[in-house]
Length: 61
Image (cartoon, rainbow, N blue to C red; front, top):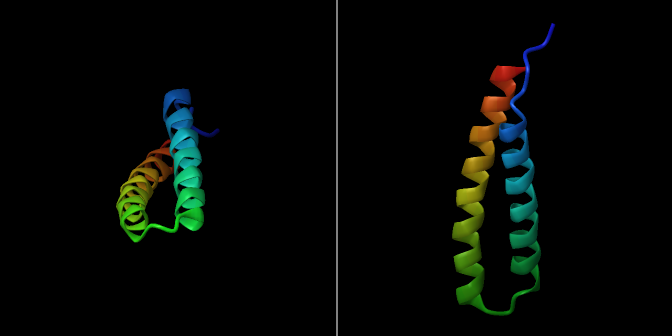
């Protein structure tokens, strides 16, 4: 029997994935090096958040 995965954790995980996808799209279409650097920082933060939620979801499975 698997453990119950909290819907809130799963929803947060999906939202972070979606936000990360949007930032990556913006980064690829940007011509501004300043904007790209800013997006890279935001992307790093979201990747860290995503990794945390991946661990939470693994532990609950």
